[in-house]
Image (cartoon, rainbow, N blue to C red; front, side, top):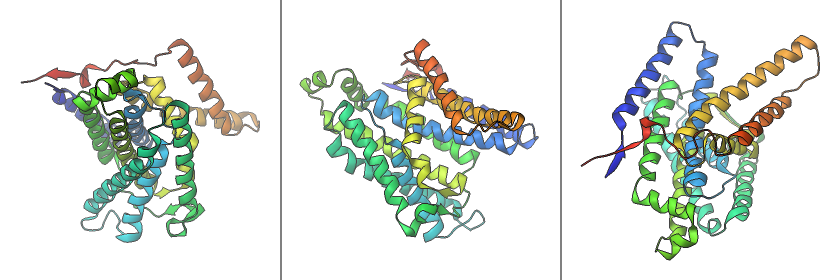
Amino acid sequence: MKKLNLPKLLIFVIVFYAAIQILYSTEMMNGYILHIINQSLIYVILAVSLNLINGITGQFSLGHMGFAGVGAYVSGTISTLVFKINPSTPGGMGIFILAIVVGGLAAAFVGFLIGFPSLRLKGDYLAIVTLGFGEIIRTIFNNIDYVGGPRGLLGIPKFSNFTTITVAALITIVVIRNLVESSHGRAMLAIRENELAAELVGVNTTHYKVLAFVIGAFFAGIAGGLFAHLLQMAHPTQFGFIKSVEVLIMIYAGGVGSITGSTIAAFALTFLSEGLRIGIRAIADATGLPIGGEWRMVVYSLLLIFIMLFKTEGLMGTKEAKLIRLKEVE
């Protein structure tokens, strides 16, 4: 039987965590850089969970941020409107964890409701349905006054920090990597390679596609909840089509089917996007030219086109780093 080489992965994460904490505590790294690292880790959760659907199972979802939106609003509602907690509230961290898990479960439930009928579709039809779902979710939250409507849900307590986000990202990688190497994961890979052949050998393709969709939605909901408790708000514009495309680009740039690639691409593209935003603003300030932030996306898109032209399989292809390769155990 194969299992994840957890000790090496844990050592790497501990070293990474300690290094960031030391840099931050000694003021060699400011809060802004730490915030970008936190966002990158949340995008790791989003990219790895979407890779389970698109890369491992071979489906094509365009509404992944819709599930993140469900998790953000449900967890934010529990912590902000129901329990009204803050970081100084006794037992507040426990309620926060409960809110995050409930948000993930709510996203998984919505994923099942959407996935069961729509995953009988294939290719472009599935992409269109998931795209429509993401926009429906965004529009629903935009019109519910209880959660702020178009203003968004404000005043969410800041419980998400480097520690909680790192732990969540590690759990996501471990769970999904072990799932991929299980019998369920092999069935999902068989669907990706040839769905008709998988059906002929007895694989219940609809069951496994829905399973991948539900698990991916669960972790997307976790990421959305962490994101809301990091920014202290949840707004409909945070979970629209463009954001879903950004996550989609991460898995294709990193390598479809590679968890390592998704992780690296999540960090690289998050920092690249933020660097372009700062660079374009500096150019506009220095020259006086009316260069808006939308040019960041133009440059970002051109760079990604070059990446895909010269590295069509993505950064890692289907390869994994040694840290998350599985080993034989008794």
